Image 1 (cartoon, helix red, strand yellow):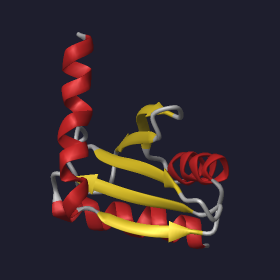
Image 2 (cartoon, helix red, strand yellow):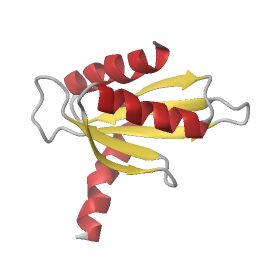
Image 3 (cartoon, one colour):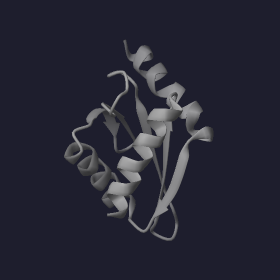
Length: 107
């Protein structure tokens, strides 16, 4: 079962190249915790998260199949900011995730 879970995140990792990226003036720990809070406050499901490996997988975006996953990847930057990349195999879900997560962090 471990390899199946690895494959689950692998497709989202590959989709990062076509994902949505934004840099936030937040340190990594704060960025990670704030994204978790935005997801919980929005009623989304945190399917998997791994702070050491710098990712969260979320589900439950409006009008999506319940199992449509969004990968949220964190890249701490040397200047104390954090680059966050969202990836999803559904472009429609990706735009909804972008509005919810990036909008929630900006607000």
